[in-house]
Image (cartoon, rainbow, N blue to C red; front, top):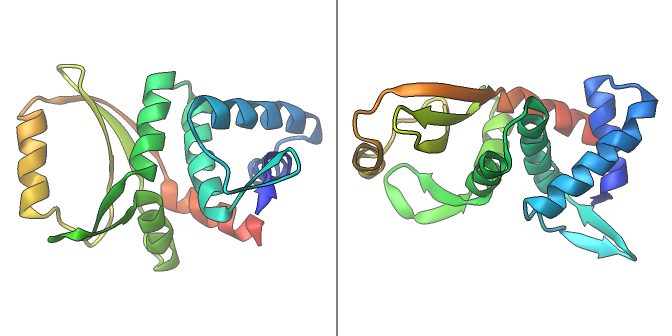
Length: 172
C-alpha cells in the first residue's frame, strides 16, 4: 500500500509529467479521494494508504476529472467501479466489485474501455465493453426497462485496459 504522495509520483511518471507538476497532481488526488468517497485501505500515522486495486479506481476517476467531467459524473463512475456485479453473466448470486472484474480482465489479456453514456432524455449510465461477454437476459431486460429505446447522444470513454496495464507495470 502507498500514500497519495507516492501514487501522485507514479501517475506523473506514467503520464510523463514534469517533476514540478507532482505537487499539483498530489493535491488533485487528495481532493478527488476526499470529495468522491474513496476511502483508504489503511493508514500509517496521518497518511492514508491505498492498495493497487484502489489506485486503479483513483486513476480511472482522475482521468475523467482531468477531462472535465463534473462531480455528479465522477461520483457515478466511482460508484459504478466500486459497485458489485455478477461475476458470471447468468449467476446474479456471485458478485464482486467491478474494478476487480476489470483487473481480472487485464490479467487475462483482454482489451476494453469503460464509458459514461448519456441518452437523449439526459439519463446517464456507466458501462464497459467487456470482450467475450454477452449481457444476461436479465441484465438486458433491466437495461431495456431503464433506458428504453432513447438514442444515445454522448459518450465519454476511457481505454481502461491500457490504463490499468500501465499502472500495474509502474506499480511493480
